[in-house]
Structures are given as structure tokens and as C-alpha cells.
Image (cartoon, rainbow, N blue to C red; front, side, top):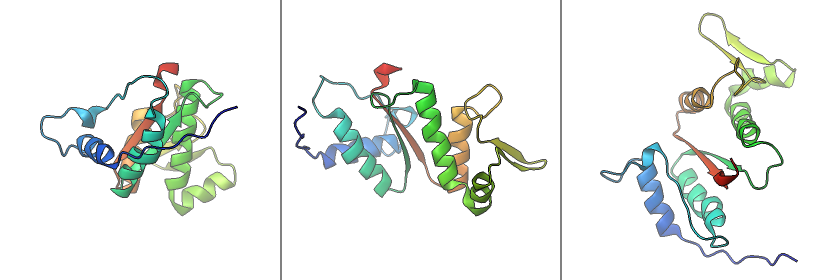
Amino acid sequence: MKLPSAHYARPELARQFADELLGLTPLSDAPNGLFLAGDRRTGKSEFLRLDLLTELTARGVLVLYVDLLQSKQTPAAATMQVLQQAVRENAGPVAKFAMSIGLEKIAVPGIFTIDLKGLGDAHGLSVYQVLHLLRQGTGKRVALIIDEAQHA
């Protein structure tokens, strides 16, 4: 039987990490990525979900969360699923309509084409391209949190 955990909130630590990730801390390389490691069962995942994700969201960051431990998919497929969902949720009314009727691509001739089913495939957009598209389309910074990354 799994006992319910009591979350130990760490809002100050979340604020510090958010400052680093957003480039507000001089000489920090965290805007390029941050790796959180620690002993098992010490609350790292709860901190990410309940503290850091909340802090980043409150600051207007679009946070995408992938939990590789809970996913039954490969790490790449789990990440792509989260990215595809983010594109769907942020694509705007025309794109949402296009997807709702089963279109697999959104295109503005001569400007861009988005292959919604092929995100991450050799013929689709790369993770970088999707993150860039989300940043440009939403006007928000984007944070991709991959929990339990050791499963990759």
C-alpha cells in the first residue's frame, strides 16, 4: 500500500530556480537547462510539479511537463505527445478547427507548414522547432520539464 505523501512546500527554492531559469541571476548558465538530482524519495518530483511548475506558470511561462516514470511510452514518444498537446492547445481557433476535422498539417503557403502527426519524426518538426514555434506563437517563454530523465 502506497502511503500518501505530505508535500513540503519550498516556494523560496522555486523562486530561486525560476530566477535562474529566466536568466535573472548573473553568471548562471541555468537558462540553457537545469538538472535536478538527489536521493530517491526526497520529493524532487513533487517539488517540480507543485513548486517550480507553479512558480514558472505564475511568471507567465508556458510549462510543459513530461513524467517518464509514469508514461508507458518511450521517452521520445512521451515528450512528443506533450509537445503535440501544447501545439493543439495553443494553435489558435483556425488550427484547432483544422485538427478537429482530422487535418494532419496546417499550412500557410510560402510561409510555414506544421505536420501535427509527424512532430519529432524525420519528416516532421524537431523538438527545438516545436519549442520555438510555441514561444513565437504564444509570446511566452517555454519550459520543458522532463521528470525522471534517467529513464531516457
